[in-house]
Image (cartoon, rainbow, N blue to C red; front, side, top):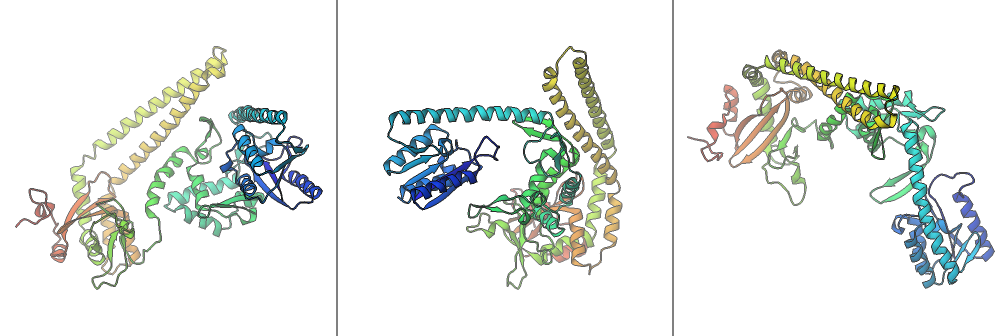
Length: 535
């Protein structure tokens, strides 16, 4: 059997390369001439300089030679087979060991002709040199195009190019990009966003181009070619858009940064990056219909989430550290009963209005009057620094216009100034946001009071959950026999976590709630720091 090997490392350039189909047809002609069956091996989009293990079909061809299935090989020319000396020597020795014949466009290659072998070695070295030189030239051209605002290859989603090849915003796709960022900031996960886009039948880039694309299944490690019409939004595509700095006007190439059209304001882009970390807390299958405190409870031992778990126990379902789902368990923190902890949180802070007392005490102890002064001072300093940078930038440009300096002389300095400007603008935006938060702080007492006035004993589950998430950021649980240490982190700026201790048998829990008194940590901790109640 003759193995027909075809390879192309990039899209066909007329007159400069043979297409895969051309290479295959020439091989088939040879198989008919030799009256041999054939098998085609195609490596598309792969460089001849790559190692054999990174060229799957070439590797398969060599395996078939080793197994005696392939006795003849056809390749259009030597560069299709290899473009580095190491691969050439390994390939040549394998053919000799298995008495395999090699053919190219010019005919059969005599593997035992010393002059031809030397010439082949020289060609292989020259091919390797040619690849390095060509790559360097191509990178230089691409870099020059990027610096002038031109696009090389397929642009990021949301962008296209004008008739001169300059990168511009695709207004229709830009709307989708803005929607993706908006949904992410609202707390939607990447899978949820992808599902939403598919449900709304918003076309992907490949669907619009009706272009084939490669899809890799990372479980089987198999790559298949799919039609553009089969393309769907996936979570990885959504994430790629959310973390790509190009949308804030920063285009990176070869460790250099270039300006490009902005779709998402830098401040909004940065807020999204910060929010992605928060969104990761709310992953996995939702069980909101069962557990009031899911995504709120955390393990004080290992830091993982406490999740509700269904059991047949008469005591009710427990919350347990998520690490216990693994075998063996990585954490020995004790489970806590769902009815007890949910009852404690809801009644203590919302029904008995302990949350309102916490907020009032917090504002009494906090010097609120000093906060606006500090924020105002920071804002003034940042604005002054930004003004100085603007002046430096203007002076540098003036020196170019006067002929004192060239564009090349100031290019690096302008880049540093521009990066610093963006950094200052983000800081100013954040300070202004802090100003707004501080203004809202003063209204928090009234807001808490208003919320708690709506609370009734038979409030629907979803309303309870919304109230809890609004005012409680996180609850940490640490068991130290015989007590649970429960630390509450509230969504109140600069309020320190509030800590409570509850006996593992929940003794006195109801009495404590009925009287509205706190479980004071001092009552439960002795001088050695042990969780034992003083008597």
